[in-house]
Image 1: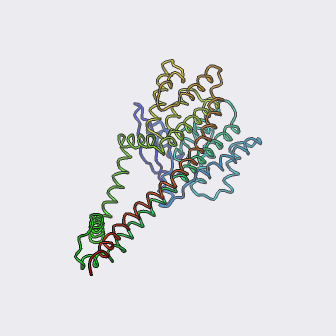
Image 2: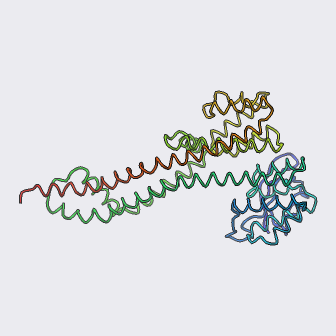
Image 3: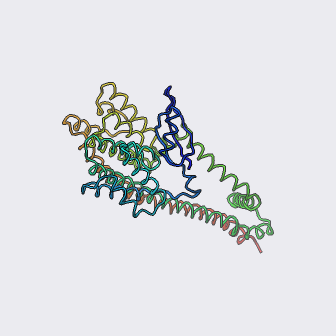
Length: 397
């Protein structure tokens, strides 16, 4: 089998690579014999087939909830994993759980075992489990993680549902436009040409556009592919991603929604981390990673730097345009009373409701806008075809 790994050499330099071995344990031993400190090792998905089945968030939530219930009843983590393995059908998840069980039985910490599979268990998941190891609250923490993941999935689902309507309407508008320009308008063109009338400017433009779409359709396809590829490439660059994230939170209709989503996700993560006993600096670092926006990530990193220098979280957030002043006041009261984790959890619940309300408001506003947009597009093309007909009807017979 082929394993991907991250390791550190004796000089402290990080290395990424792959290694062939019969098992993860053997691959780890090979790397250690070569003098490497193994940071992460995971079987390459290609080693399990070209079309390795993905593990959905719902499957991860269900497995985490099962573990929480079984561990809470007094079952050891190893036995709980064995019980879940007996009924698991997803080969990818089954492979991961088998490795986790093997590592736990060999005496490895559960957090270290989870770190071997970063594609499935992110830093937040691992950090919460690591915190539970020091407090002995594994069952409670697993239940908390399942709740955290469930809220994340619900929020993403609501956002996708809100975005689906305008995307579908846009696709319909494009399809109707292409149909009118490539099928309907060409049927009128011979009639306009025979009569020899002076065509209105909108009709001339639409006929020229129709002709280029029919005769140079391959250039249009190449152009669309180039635009999509360019957009994807731009998003992978730091300036491009920063510009796109800035645009998202600045849009008149969607901006407030994207802001609330980033704030809700950040606050929920920070509150969950602090209530689980994760140190403040590590909590802030993980909060920046899950914010989902370059500018909010930079905000939380600035907060982390200032807190490292002895500043309080509320002071670090004060005056930042990305963060509401009312929320800063709530954090101030939470720090003053020593109940910051409780305040943050309440605030995250409040912002979850705000996100849901914003989604409903945005959706209700999008519908008439998209209908008007389609009306303008279809109506404009229709008028460009009717204007010459009106001119023909006024010509003397």
